[in-house]
Image (cartoon, rainbow, N blue to C red):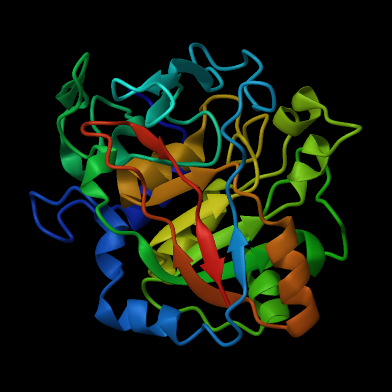
Length: 311
């Protein structure tokens, strides 16, 4: 398989296969150790909490058929005021069920989500993902994702409310955002990159097409920025995560392949960052305790979640 040179060169430099042993299935999340968690806890100064997840709603969902089979949540009732005793006026119960794509809203990707050249992270065969799900590197391996979160507000660092459609984020943009926040990166940090793209989800001008394409996002070159700083995971406020349309015509979703396959770095999409960013801009604190532990779907390729940032 011919791999474009710019991609192959970065892939060789950031590959983490074997770094945490031949059986490793969580990649850069190994970097979140006790010290990293303590650093996150030390970021809690005022007790302010920010929920970073989109509603799990069929009516307000962000899926519009652009990705095959990825549907918004469909919730239905299986019990409505069902009597649980002989007296129907005593104890009753109501329950519901939901069907959803695990990556339909705010989510983490499992490391097994993408493959290329017949391999997933750590050299496991792509065939380890089957109709039964991910036998290796499934989302259930991410038992705890909690540590110091760092907001890199790229839009604000460039003096914008939102980045231009299709803007390709550079390493210099990330450095500028870290400088804006007065943040010195440390091993095990969880980075949230804000582009301002969620402006397209606000009523009354909600536009799912504008939210999806063209979209600002990360580039191949930024993978080395995260790798050199031992970042544990990265999430953005966009649907695609990386710049879209893609950076190169001859390789599709290259940042996905670098992060998930080569680095073993969990990535997240559709994170709601605007309120958090506005607060950070007011008090100047761009670090926080972040609890972003996914739901433990066994062998899942991703998981919805409602991350919480605590400042």
